[in-house]
Length: 504
Image (cartoon, rainbow, N blue to C red; front, side, top):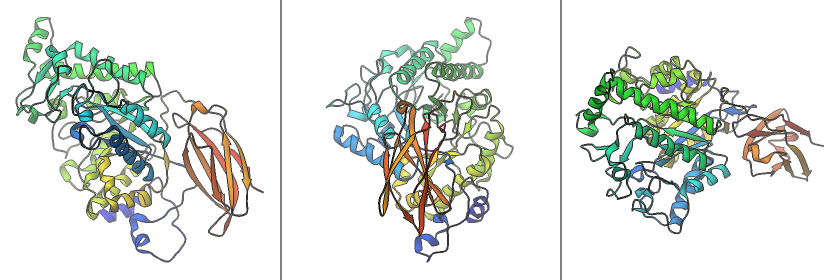
């Protein structure tokens, strides 16, 4: 069934074009997921993967590794994303009210050094390293944080520097060993926002991203209610009239709205993304069943999307296409129907299933459904980056569904940073041509888009901003190189006027 869906959607997907000329069929070419297609215009699609640091899921592979080994593993992940034509990495920097960066308020993460509060030795700033290395590869970096989780059972012992100790009156303990901020405490809201604004101010991140841990999942406290009854009674004594559920949701809404507004005041280009649980409420839409995040996580995710308190929305849609009670395309369509402010809707999908042929088919079909249903602003986030370690899956991504590099969709509600067109020079030799370009405002250029015309066929490639020259072949499949077009790409993916050169 999945292959039937794929064949139908291929005809309307963003990148679908005329198939390649006939050539002898290799085993690789015989795979319909690896068919080559042509596209003359640059593709726009958000392509991201989560890199989880909590419990050392993705990086570093264990606490206490040497700085050299940590850097080697980071570079391997970023090289993999670049090779597979991703354009964004979502890197977890605050997994349990601690930091994988230099914070003035929170301790260094246990997952980094094996001891909470201990800095890397020799010293380096992991987030700064990730940002620099991502940007060198033309990748955006979004800093991912968990707003209210203070301690995770995998996070070592609770140190004196832990926020569980430093802000003890604002923290409760759950029965599974986690510690949690009390989201309704104004001190928690103020502290959390201040901590995140410091992160935005001090680092050249491209986005700020948070996920579904608003209130804990019921199983974390063995099904018992979140232990904030005394705070709710105090609220009522002060004249509060909201039900407990509405009181909790109002506090999360305050955090969400205020954080978005203040990030935009500080750095408008920094994208704010939210990744909630994939189902809003059971029966919305009618056939959907599952956890009620509105009642159980106190997350009014529909409101946030309706109000536009975010730049992109990444519901965690980890279910297959044909699972009737949690149907992937039905949920994509429903969330899009709630996208009244026309923000980006970029679903999170479970790519860890892609270690089998059936799993690869499922992931590819979900990506193609996104392209068909979200064709003005397609995008996807992989849970998680480890899935690209599967060789067959990585090949299908690199040679198939992501075979063309992509810029990010434009965020038209944000200020558009314009950049000047580059100047271009070239030296032509017998077999090759060396192209060079210069930007008059290099500090505003994030990437360079280069088009080459062979005969009647244009092709393109995207380069990081620090690359200023390339060497290209003068002939491609018997067609001569006749024209070159170079375009500067700004930080928020706006294109300059093109500079086109006709070769002699």
